[in-house]
Length: 311
Image 1 (cartoon, rainbow, N blue to C red):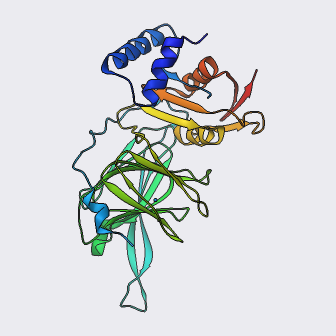
Image 2: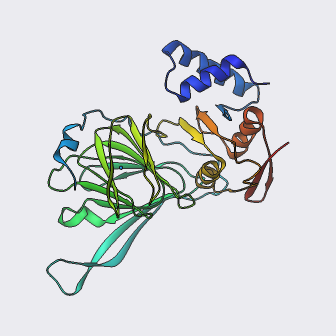
Image 3: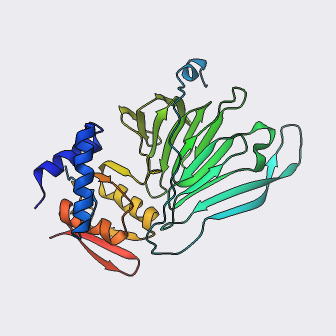
């Protein structure tokens, strides 16, 4: 049975309200719990660019990435591809060849760090992919995010904003800040979280929202997004928090993180929500067991598929 004190600490950590002493207590519990053969995590069921935006950009820098090796269902290295494509130049009637760089962090592998030509950086969570023009030629600081979750730390350049465009048509434009975009192709929503500074979120209809530090939005095309005060997920240090995640989000997370397909009865688990704090990198089996131990979900693994159900 779940310890009420531990659950209280886990929920406070997920809400970013733990005191230093409570964090120490929680970490001691993790260390002891894992030694006993249990699992280190918790699960509780229960937005035209405006100059004013950039006045809010802060100087806070994110901590350096600490790459970790994950337990692998698939053993694969990061893939970096130079692809020759075509790009229409404004003053030309003919397309000119443009070298595109594609970076892939395979599912089940470790985090990948990308250093862009302008000094900006990105951290790709497993199962993520980005593309950009080699050398950011002509000052084009545009990155495509077809799939996955990526933390960006951008450098300031007032003449050429740094822009990220997702496969869903959501555009995030900044001049210098730290922010996270989650755009899993399996889900309709694109989530944007700002750690420091400010960003503008747009789609085909225009500007959707302006976000500043510690603000986020979950945006679905054609619907108004709701801005929230919420810390950004930061997986660079080996810790991760899922907040109010339903089964569809959890399934996408597991597929990208571990390369495993999730099967479940949507009707049976429609009311399930998770606030999950992960203190360190877990293996897939450990993660499934924590859902069983603390969230009440049973599971069966068959090949590269896991099925969740209630007992």
